[in-house]
Image 1: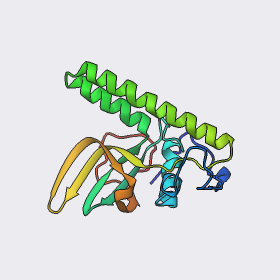
Image 2: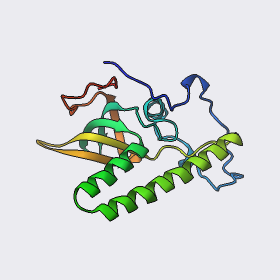
Image 3: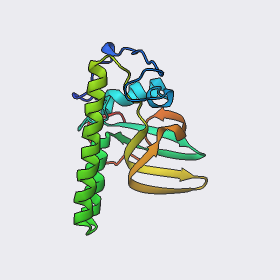
Image 4: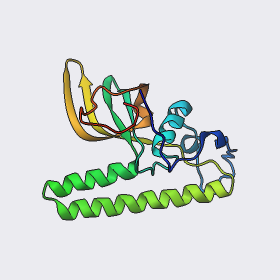
Length: 178
């Protein structure tokens, strides 16, 4: 399997654990806000979709266990997911809704990136990744499965993961880990 790390990501050699003082955090962050549920998985995701979930090119095939359901597909950044979701709405005839969703979510992501940058400059811990965004997803529930073009899930619900996807499109020719 081959992988391609995003050009938009930070070098993992530069990753540092920053101090977190819950009693004096300027933004009122709690342990749940800054401590990753699975640091290894978060570092793998960051390598492909960016620390701020902003990479436009990176993707990686993963299979997740979430509440007894298996979810398998390609992880993409929140930025790519938002644009793809908006395009899906527009293609379905909801052009104004698609435009509004894209504008609102991209503004939210930009605000979050500014907070991340401000905290990073002050040597403060950033907010931990809370969601995972995927495309070309197959969801398995018992003996049934369903394919969906886009999926977003809470990382707090992920109880296990592995690299590789069971639902990669055959025509895919990029260099991402599949």
